[in-house]
Image (cartoon, rainbow, N blue to C red; front, top):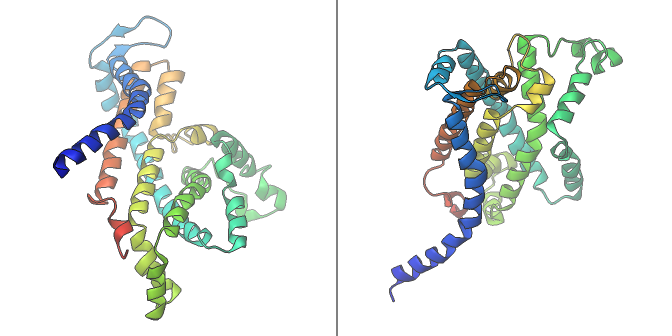
Length: 297
């Protein structure tokens, strides 16, 4: 028996392991998506009769300037969130990867936001940022007494801050695990060569985190495309649609406007854009996903 046939038999037996995941993905991912696709060609208010109308929903949504605005707001929040979350997550992940006990205690406290729901976080920040009764007014700090959720620019900045506050701990956890997988021999060799901590960080740590960065960025991109609950509670898309992201636009059209057809079109646009962006980010990592762990080994 050749090595090729043995490898083929092993891959054939391992293929059965993905069957449960494939069944679940088909039941809860593919089939609902097909239903949404069919619904996008109909007129339905959510309770009445479903009437086929062809491409009318697609034409109305794709020619609506509101779609371009919502897409632009989504991309803006996505880019700003990545710019804030990625460097902060890397720094925090590298810090808590240390073996000191106090870092472990700090890590436990720092991961607290992961235990909170987005709605609870949004309600809390909405109360804290209230210009009349919030934290700034209570402490008498003029800098904090701003119309955080009433000014379009400040509202975008507030959304990015709150989203980053919630998800930086999650991404830090990913980087923490990746940093602990870097061979200690690399740092020992660097110290022998006289490299300081900063040089070690940029010459060893960052290159070894390349594929973790790709994974984290993919999750930020995909998560930003479906960001809804936090913005819904915090700003409801305001002021003046300044924070009306695509997922919120879909909800407002479907469940507030009772227009399930156009909402289905937006849902499909979200899926297509998210998949394309995720594939683009993944392609930046190259073809060999194991290259980073093999470097220097």
